[in-house]
Amino acid sequence: MHGKLLLLAGLYLVQGLPYGLQSGLLPMLLRAGGLSLTRVGLAKVLYAPWLFKLVWAPLVDTRGSPRSWVVDVALDVLAVQLLEPAELGPGNTVQVVAYKLGSVLAGGGLLALVPTLSWPLLFLLLATIYWLAAALAWAAPALQQLPRPQPSELPPHTLRLLRDLLAVSGTLWMAGFVLTYKLGEQGASSLFPLLLLDRGLSAPELGLWNAVGAVACSIAGSSLGGALLARHRQLLPLLRSVLQLRLGGLACQSALLFYLDAPGTRLGPGTVLRGAALLSLCLQHFLGGLVTTATFTLMMRCSQLAPSALQGTHYSLLATLELLGKLLLGTMAGALADSLGLPCCFSLFLALSAMPILYLSLAPGTLA
Image (cartoon, rainbow, N blue to C red):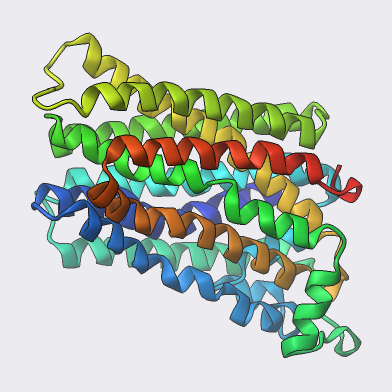
């Protein structure tokens, strides 16, 4: 199992680099440059290419070998095929933690390097890392052991393919959950750092806390979630508990935001208010990490209920819907804040964060 996890860790770390660039670096630079919250939010449109995973997933499931595909686009498909049911907890912990480490390197690390290196040099550095990851994937023994798909396993296409995907037990419920479980959290995490920037934190300091400190807490939360799953904690009760904790953390952050939204409020150096704001930022990322690991394990469990020729495509469908749900609020949050005000926005985020707790009671028994 260790060989599989090491391979997945390296590949998911590389996959997290562009996410960190777009989620950690660009919003800080755009807001520091004077752009409105609405325009900063619209930068989330850059995530659109991730929504097209479902387009090539059927090809990855049925054409060529995982070894040849993974040097480009097939990482999620590889994870579904590579991990045994007993390995889902550790495997998804590695997936989430490594992805976030890559995000930290690209978000906080690049933010620190921007004054020193030019943009062409930064992207050349990223390209070099991708070439190294492709070489790692090509040489990995774990990939050479996976069988090629047989011609008889070719899946149907278009509408019939979608019908077969939705017919997999638990898929419709899972689709609804991944679309909604991050709505409130994503909206709050998009706006709260920008509010701290407006209240006196410098962009480099905020980049350090938001892209390094907070993500380190997120990694700690993901690791704790994996440890709890490895100890055979029941997945759905664990997910319910961490969703409730996240709601409580967001309620505390919202109360803090209502105070910070008062005219003239500043986060002076060394003040209790400044410490509370940064602690709230880190706590929400810690709880979000717990929720993410449990949710991705549930997604993979659902995909493994599909026929082998559909498993990669099925997981890509869920991953696409998960990203779409995060993009909905991440893109709209700035416009909502500019039009409704931050207190109304965070009240909405609280309501959206309560929804998945209620929805979890409708989970089918096949996912328990």
